[in-house]
Length: 282
Image (cartoon, rainbow, N blue to C red; front, side):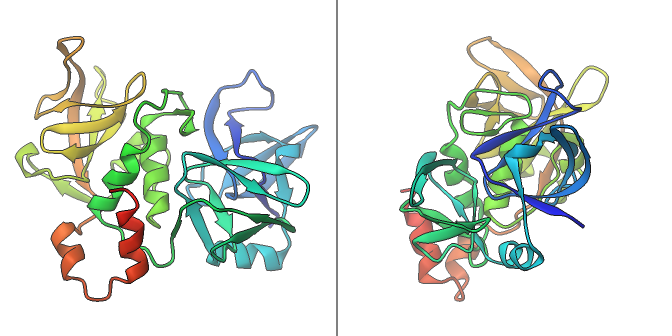
């Protein structure tokens, strides 16, 4: 198996060879893919975290050695900065929130043989305790990011891309598509039982799941609709006050994170490092 790493800040993954093909998702810096096929300047890949298959330009990914693959998969952090440059000896590398920093030691990370220093805030995925509190504080950093179908960065993102990257930073892999994300977690039977951090999925007129968001406070949902925004939500769906109408019909509510703020407070194993990471958002 040939494995490559995304060595640029954001790389489009397309449905076929060529820039005119639909962008179905994006790779963020440091994410790993399996090579399936090469054709001219394009490579067909499978994203290792969600099995998404598509095409990328061959010069936007770098092949890894077996030793690098093992080391990168088991030792990395995620950037919490909206956008900040990492510094190498002779160049800067712009990275976004959610980017993977392989072999990060608190000051430096390694990317395909090149060492970079990074002074921004990060999440150590191996030690972080996923909580709904932290999930929402991360989600709010994306507010006003423009909607972009297939996007996964703060400069263009869609609803399921937002959910996927947020949970990635908490060490939880979720699929890319809404209908697949809706299969994860615990089913919440009634809207009144929903709590902060729950995922809410919506359907189109044909009954297909086509939209998703996160309960960010009682009766409010954070989602991507034109931009990442907060709207009212109830058992009917999302109510857009500016348009004075419901824009999305509720289909199902799922709970992926079972911990809450009280769980976090009562967990004696929570480290000072994790507490400090949460404080960064206050």
